[in-house]
Length: 294
Image (cartoon, rainbow, N blue to C red; front, side, top):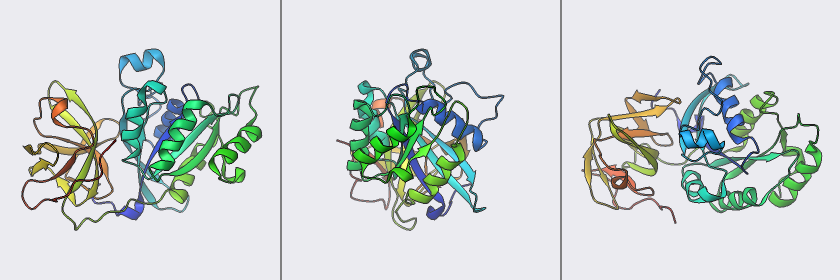
């Protein structure tokens, strides 16, 4: 479904301390929107690296498109960009934040706010993201959701009444999270009519297809069979395929302003598609890069 109007797009990530239930919440969002059926559901669907599943921590960024019919009856295209919750991966967090307008802040109802949550939250605020606060694991016997909501209100300045109470494990309050994302997170800014500018925020190597380059299209349109230039390296590539992760890669005709997805272009090495670089058209493209990463 290329060319979704930007006002129907929401780009968001989930930030949380390790073990506060971020991956479980992501799984529930995938289930509720029908991105994966219950039969296909592997616990922690977005965590594809084996090491990740083994240690239960999110390492590799993932970017999944969810099609969600809101209570208003409107269909929205939501891009969930998964971020690592572990302290070692804060660089990957900064990469994913640059592709989003909003962040769902998940805090464990029994543990409360922890140092890493604060660090990631301040990064999100610094990046200009709108926060959607969530207290998770309200099903636990030791849960103190009201206390934790007050704690969140204190550090974020958001009203305690805006904090959502959720149990990702028991699938309680999941729809409310998506409704809050639509209501609170602003749609992406950018112009389809402007020259193509897309931000590279991750990539992974596939032995059959070469490098999958993950991009957030800010302006213009990225289509297959076009020649693109990476502004920082100056290299030119012919795009073989563009598409979105749903969570498996699905080819599309194009990606336009506000959308998140991938492209392949027979790039052989991940180092050739640098995170923070700007993708534009080889001919008639943009002259100034997007603000990259630190």
